[in-house]
Image 1: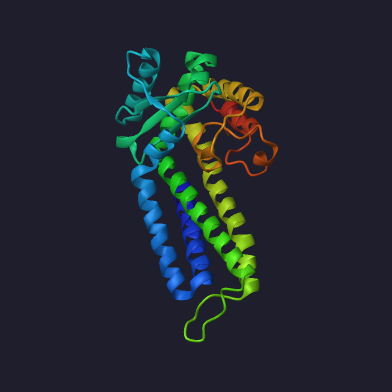
Image 2 (image 1 turned 135 degrees about the vertical axis):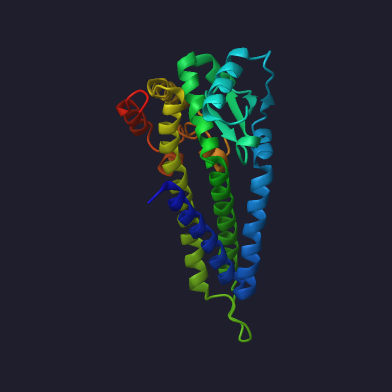
Length: 285
């Protein structure tokens, strides 16, 4: 089963969960409203997710004269990947990290922190940038953003179901095949957010492995990215980034890794496993 097919199934599951919880809240009308909500949130994610996330981290656009070596790396990798030159941004934080955003290769952006520019050598930085551009070419950014948006909507509706159950506001209407029982609403409120989060994690983790492999091939050597991940993990553990959990999946390493609770449900596979897979690759494979 291909990663694309798996991802399509997972996103379909998220959408179905959103519609079902809408039905639990408001019957057929609730299901319709939930479906419309899912479509609306996906449209907003598609068109504006890059602007929202870049503004969230106060990322500033970089001109080539400000960072010629960085631009040279990005341009060379973009040429190899046969995609347009993405916009380049700098995030004003000492914590080393990076992410890519944008709905497609024609509207892509790569953002790096001040910290990552300081601690990585050219080959390591090339590995990181190749990983991020692989997310762009694989359309991972769009898929992950939609998954995060749907998961957030499910969690929000689940909270509504929790309050409705507490106040007994969702009695079954005799004239409509409406909301479910209080017990059903309580179960939905507990199970739905957890299930949504697990589906989102499945999307994110599978695509991190794929981006590592395709990024290593794009750079032409796997050890640059492997060495970069080692450095980034050490730096992140020492000084975690002040990141929004809803956007944690975008970064090359989990920006919340320094927080014990966050690691229980990490959007990223273990760094050790990622490094082991990279070191097992042959150059050019």
